[in-house]
Image (cartoon, rainbow, N blue to C red; front, side, top):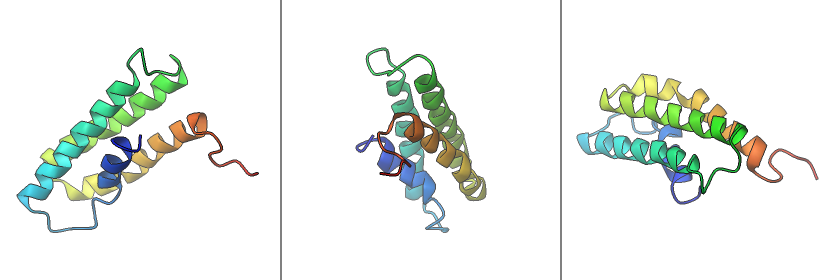
Amino acid sequence: MLEMIFPTSNELFYVGREEDKSQKDWNDLRNNMVILAESANLLMADNRAKDKDQWMKDAKLLRDVATKALRLAKAKDLEALKALNDEAYESCQSCHVHYRPGYKRRL
């Protein structure tokens, strides 16, 4: 999570910081979205999956968002990438609610 998903998802969450993107910026974003999508695939591997129900649903949500973001990065569609933010947030939120101990719980 901390080494792959967190930094690459932040590239999507903060995609609008730099409106004027160079070709290198677009290439870096595409590469990060590949890593994000593949991270979701790794989460679904038999030796990593916590269960075959909600875990798989949450991982698929992440993969779907990352795949959309990859397609949009290839098209250099900044506005559509920014619009994908809510869907990306929901993907993260769902997994955290189900699997991150203490997430959104009061002491």
